[in-house]
Amino acid sequence: FGWWEHVSPAPKDPITGVTEAFLADTNPNKINLGVGAYRDDQGKPVVLQCVRNAEAKIAACEFLESNAAAVGSKLVEESAKLAYGTQAHVVKEGRVAGLQALSGTGACRLFAELQRRFYPGSPIYLPDPTWSNHHNIWRDAQVPERSFRYYNPITKGLDFAALMDDVKTAPDGSFFLFHPCAHNPTGVDPTEEQWREISYQFKVKNHFPFFDMAYQGFATGDLDMDAQAIRIFLEDGHLIGCAQSFAKNMGLYGHRVGCLSVLCADEKQAVAVKSQLQQIARSMYSNPPVHGILLVSTILNDPQTKALWVKEVKVMANRIQLMRATLRERLEDLGSPLDWENITNQVGMFCFSGLTPDQVDRLVREFHIYMTRDGRISIAGVTTSNVSYLASAIHEVTK
Ligand code: PLP
Image (cartoon, rainbow, N blue to C red):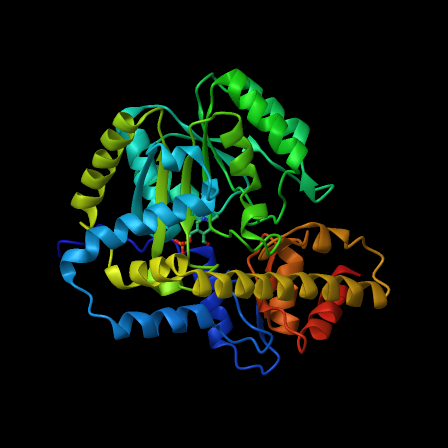
């Protein structure tokens, strides 16, 4: 008998399972379309040049440990400008309660904890479907979960009428989570007009909008355009919560750099909320590691390095858009009787292909192509050299 006899293994994360199966496969044609990390056209992970430049800058100057807090504040300020706009009044008026966070996951976790402490029992409404970790994060913070309708499998697009219906029928003053751009896993975003309608209805219902922005830049290639939903809500005077991650758009996956911001009615509230967030972080991990924060704030603070970053984000987004177009074209060239418009209509890193679990299983078994069983394709794993093979395999299993 041991202390941990009653502990059975936790269920595997769906993505981890896909990666493990991919790594164990020895077939030279194998493709990993599971993981949501950017790869270049050679299938290699990318270290952005702006990050290399920032590394060199940091190495050249002496960093004093006592500067850590200042570096953190700079990160929060620059992140807020990215989300809310460089000229945003909320930033100038000191109404942003912001804290550097352990990437997007950590930012969501901090917010969930804040929500539980100050709105105990109030649920979070998550889109159906959503990034699977959202369920874990709010569950572990002991916030009850509800869902709102989002994706329509028939149109492979947004079920806007159902979404609005759920927004209207939720009790007044509910917390809702949105992906402001490049929705994971569907790649389906509301249009500008639809965001305006959602924002309007949020005013009517006095709901709280929480934006989890993990892919700013990946939908359109333009950082401001990708923050359009947030800007619309801001214009309408909402007090917003926002989780930001620099994992994907700066390629800093392992560095765990992110930011949580919560907009407040005045500076006094912002100071109070920030101090609560600091207290929450303190008992969980005290402070995040400072190197990644230094990297991001160096990039965002230096106009030249920032301009380079903006360009590099565009390059990544363009490659993804090109692979979407190519995959669709190859499927059409093969004479696929199915409609593959959704591949190019959807945006960001992911494509919700509509492949069934059985078809996904066949792709694994017969073609060594790996993805989650919901049919989500990470377009980052598609390259000029594997796109034809992928298209013929998809065609074969969907005939
Ligand atoms: N939110 C969404 C919707 C995501 O897809 C991800 C990553 O897959 C994250 C948050 C968090 O990513 P990270 O914690 O690596 O920044």
